[in-house]
Image (cartoon, rainbow, N blue to C red; front, top):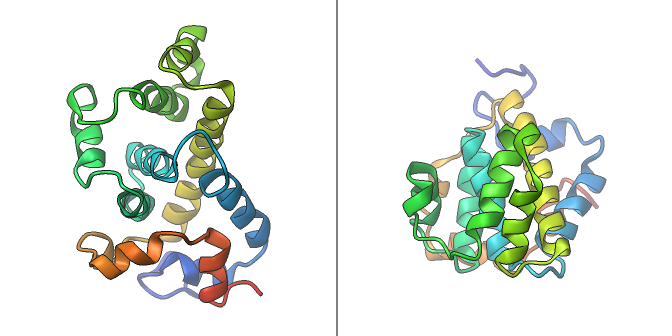
Length: 186
């Protein structure tokens, strides 16, 4: 049985937002501002942060969806799995490692963050703006993971076995554009 009787037994995120549209437009704007607009971090790196935080939070839908988006923007297929299985030996760009360590700690033990964590990000060549973008993405996906898991959204097979068309659809689009195409906003 679905967690919400008004939703399908296995709801998609679009089902949730169709049923509960309150606040959707500003939420999409935050997604677009931090995941698609200009940043020192590439779109693929920002999607990887979203996928990594979601994976750490055990949110299967968001981890799968944003892993797919990261892959659409050039992140290697195995990276997220490697990060989840063995962070220290994952084949991730070394410049990204301190940002991922920072957001991993922020997501699960924010009280343990120190100036050394931020300094590691700066020492890797990132600016304060890049770190702030990563922090907001982490916060956004802690929030989104709770919405997704709290409403019973799970990923469909298309997230685990995407076609080239699935990947291509994710390139160049915005979250607001997705919502418009799904009939969620005007």
